[in-house]
Length: 261
Image 1 (cartoon, rainbow, N blue to C red):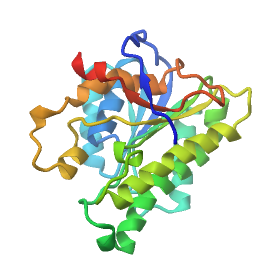
Image 2 (image 1 turned 120 degrees about the horizontal axis):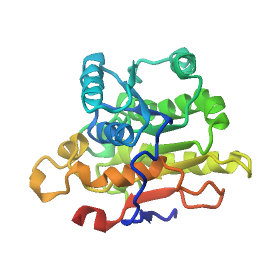
Image 3 (image 1 turned 45 degrees about the vertical axis):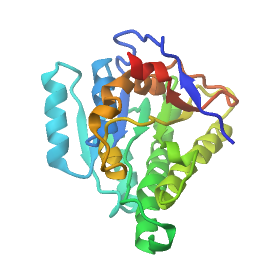
Image 4 (image 1 turned 135 degrees about the horizontal axis):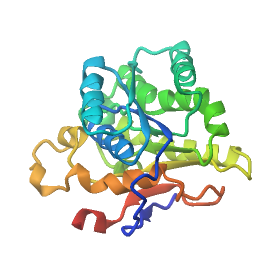
C-alpha cells in the first residue's frame, strides 16, 4: 500500500516562490481548485484557470486581478463532453499564449451522491472515469512536451481519503481517485532518471468544500477545518521543494498541525 506523507507544517516558502511560473489549475471554480488558484497567484504564478462554466471562471479571474496578482488566463471546457481534439486544443492554446507550462494542479473532480455499488450504473461510472482519470491523463499527455522543457515542472492530482481507505457507498468516486496514485507512480517511473519533473498526489482530508457537503450533508461546517487551512499544503505540491527523484515520496496530505494553525 502506498504511504501518505505529511507535508511539513513548518514549510515556509518565499512570498514569490512561484514568480514567473505558468500553472494550469483544472476545476478552478470548485472549492479546492479555487483555493489552489488563489494561492498560486498570490505567490507569483500566472494561473491558467480551467472550468466548465465561463461565467464562474470570469468571476475568479476578476478576483485574482482585483487582488493585484499576476493577470490570469481562463479556458472553459466541459470534460464530460470533451474529445481528444479538445484536450489537444487546450494544450495548443496554452503553448500559443505562453510558449511554456511549469505545472498543473488537477483539481477537477466528478462526484455523484453516495450510493451502493449495485445502484451505480454505467453512466455513473463513465462520468467518474472521464473526469477523474481520462481527462487529467489526456491534458497531461498533451502538455508533456512543455512540462519536460520546464525547470522543475510539477504535476499534482487531487485525490481523496477514501481512495486509500475505501468504504461502503464510495464506489466509483473512491475507485477512480485511487487510480491517480498508480498514474502518478507510473509517470514518475517513466520519466528519465535525470529529469526534474515530479508527479504527486494530494489528499486534503476533511475540509469545508462542495464535495464534503455532498458526502456529509448533515455535518455542520463549523465542525471541520476551513479550506484556507490547506493553502500552504497546496503550495507545497507545486513548489520546487518536492523531490524529483524516482523513489521520492509522491502522495501527500497536510500535517494535522495545518488544521490547528
